[in-house]
Length: 233
Image 1 (spheres, rainbow, N blue to C red):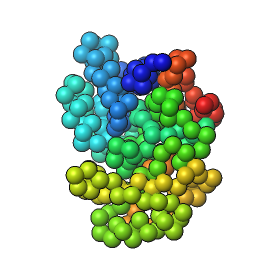
Image 2: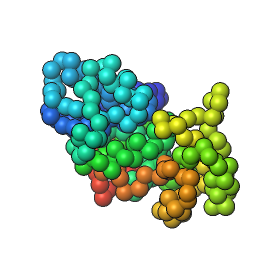
Image 3: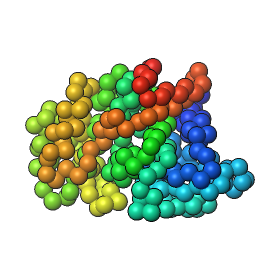
């Protein structure tokens, strides 16, 4: 059986093929997109790719991409992006996503919404028949009154755990993340609406109707699904 890291690299490098000279490219956060950054850096160094501008989704990505020689900009200068390459924690057949395992969900969603094309790269272990089967939903909340947001999640039928390290995890915006286990979801859209209406909830990790492409690497090779196609498990 091939290693997961090898599959991640294959998916990421496949997605980089869609980048053309002069494009404005969103740079996603996460272990799979790390390989895409390395491939972009290699192509730029070799002169096989020129004139691109990368817009990073996190401070960590900004530091890493800059170290690889990728020219960087922001959404203020480049409010419309040609494409974004990003990962996901879980992908459903209708290209619904759970994202935010790395804690960058707010900026990732802002960049996704600014992109003409959102290419998601995953290994086949991230595919799921229903969102919530494999991964909790990260919910970014302001620290003030965060326990009230955890209680709200429980009222919706979920279990909320404050993401911890040596101290509570902080996003680039200084907020907390609640990892919310709702189990396999029958109505992720309805849940998204309820979370969006709650004061104190900054953003949630349900990315619906944003992915235009899903690139999946597995034992049988790389598969590419476009908008309107079902992602086959």
